[in-house]
Image (cartoon, rainbow, N blue to C red; front, side, top):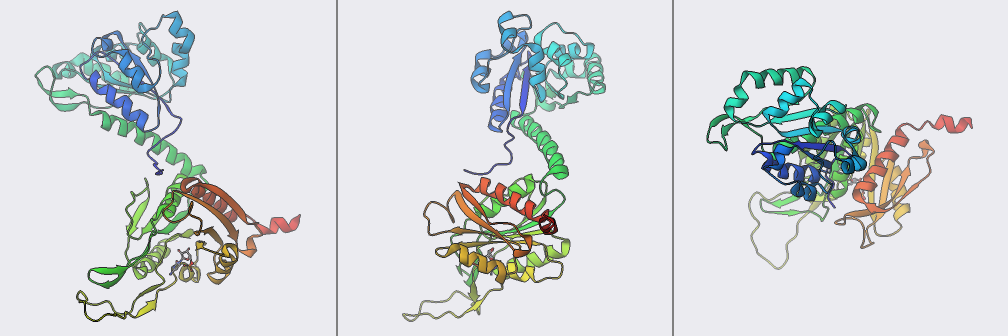
Length: 424
Ligand code: C5P
């Protein structure tokens, strides 16, 4: 399972559809909003139903479509007031001239116009009409009134129109509308996380993936690390309100939303970049990268040619990135990982001390069901002695859930005051 921050769970959108040829695009819009994780309910005016059927939207939204204001059966299900309260955002797309006029005048003679008056949710309109109707003074006057009333207008685009005219009045593509809605909720979510998130106002630097150590211009030494744990942690730290920089070795993963990514190849590059970021100011350093322990002593300038039966390549030790950062004067809170095949906890506890870490998360990579290329993981977390925090067992779960629990562990350690323990 991939961790997709573009998915926003549990937000309710009402899509209002009015009579215009652009109504056909609204089918895709509803689909895209559902894909993004929104709960969608559709309200259609009578005019809209002349262009496209409620059944289409019922199938796409997974909910009954609302068409009537004074239908006792519909009102008994979810009446117009409940519908108005249910919405986190009302998006009218397409919004016809007639609907804009109704909204501006405050009429309430059908379900959509009543809903407009009854909701306290933000209302967005995406007008779509013939270019002459768009330019008409009455339309522009109505729009100005609605903007004054706090409505957000998504401007129509210019181009060829279904009626044969060319000009302003085309509804933006459904993907673009869905993107704007998703962006709006992301920004709102981010603002809350930045204020109240577990890692609010922290700069978190994460190393992830393998490193690649060149042998010659075409060959290298590397390992099977996929970077999934580090990327999941980057997403979880961002969702917790942190500013996140991900130093990624060569992996084929998309950068999580909002995360700054710096691509590197070798361990030396990874260390140089980490040191630079330390200068920028870093509060938490999380080392998930599977750094190659050795690099080739002398990288050949040209491709090494096949010769004898054996080839000796001298290797020298790579710097230990996490241990080097932990030795700096202004060291951040240091988190390391230990992947072991035996004596897991013993080795991890040793590394915690040897590398001067604050916290270490270890897992048993001899288990076939977790670790490296798997989407799941199970870990045990240890804190440095000074924290007086007991070890934590994180049961087998998706890497996203493990990442979330690691964020909680980091938060707990950052806010734990051992002096308080002693007082009791
Ligand atoms: O010593 P070992 O490789 O088992 O330690 C694992 C931990 O140390 C991980 O957090 C890894 O990212 C980090 N590490 C590092 N630089 C190295 C080797 C490991 O930052 N050269």
